[in-house]
Structures are given as C-alpha cells and as structure tokens.
Amino acid sequence: QVQLVESGGELVQAGGSLRLSCAASGRTFRTYTMGWFRQAPGKEREFVAGINWRGDRTFYADSVKGRFTISRDNAKNTVYLQMNSLKPEDTAVYYCSTSLRSTIPTMRRDYDYWGQGTQVTVSS
Image 1 (cartoon, rainbow, N blue to C red):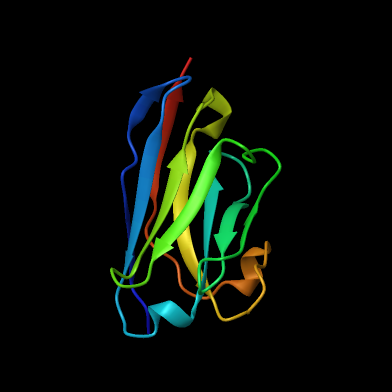
Image 2: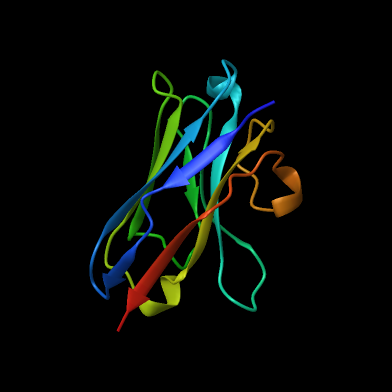
C-alpha cells in the first residue's frame, strides 16, 4: 500500500507561481507512474500532468502545457508540480496519485492510490 501526502497549496495572485509536493510512503514508489489531478468546485476531477517511473517521460493536459512542470525524485519518494503563470481557472484542489501502468494514463480510473489533496487558489 502507498500513502500520499500533498503540500504546497496556498492563495496566490494571478501570474504567480507555486510548487506542489507529494511525499509517498513505501519502497515501491520508484515503480509507479505518478500523476497530478485537480478538482474545482462543481467539476469533475481532471488530469493535469503525469510522469513515468524513471522520470524521463512526461505528459500534460493542454490547459497547463508550457506553464506547469512535473518532476520526481525517487531517492526522496517525492513528486513535484511546478506551476507558473497561474490563472484564476487553475483554482482547485490538487491531488497526486499512483498508477501501475508503464504509460502515462489520463483517466482517473487508471490510478490507484490518492492523497488527500492540497488547495490552490488563484486570485484575479
């Protein structure tokens, strides 16, 4: 079993930056594809970014491409999401998750373990 704890969310002005972290327990962290999702009030949880187990392949939702960067440090069992040029529409609870797939899935059903989430609020 894997436990995930997100941190780094806060209130920021539009145009600002934040870095989210997701710390994972378990020695098998390095075998998982990792993903970041977000859920805004009244909306479905949506895929944001994913990274394969080695960290040499990434994939992004079109809405964040060029602004967000996902990375991981397997020695620290941690995955990061660097968010730049934030917009009010990025406001959501952000979740990290694990997948056993070797590719980077974008569907929620392909992810297994989830953290509790961290709130990101972008003011205009």
